[in-house]
Length: 101
Picture 1 (tube, rainbow, N blue to C red):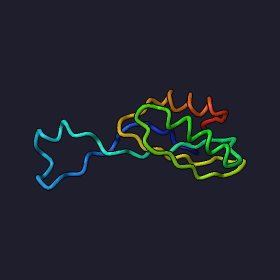
Picture 2: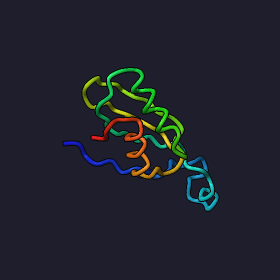
Picture 3: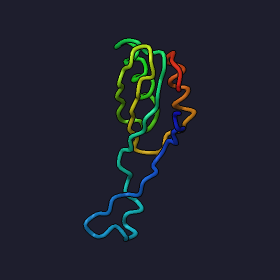
Picture 4: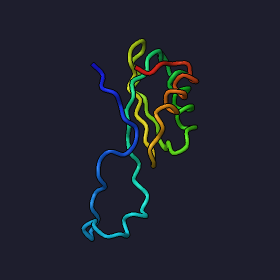
């Protein structure tokens, strides 16, 4: 059974040399956060390119990688500097012509 994926930052920030407890951390941008989704229908490098192009067009998405499983559920990993709306991800995958698992 596949667990639903919640998009956005879920783990706490790593502490810096100062101990990470000061107010000066509040204004620092979050590091890129990796999220994984499963996508069906991809069979080739063109499919990977289409999904990558649609996901990188979403504001905040900085990197996309695909573990292609032709004819099966391919694992798509993307990084974002800020939380990404789950509906935007679903729409991007649909626009590319594929389906989320």
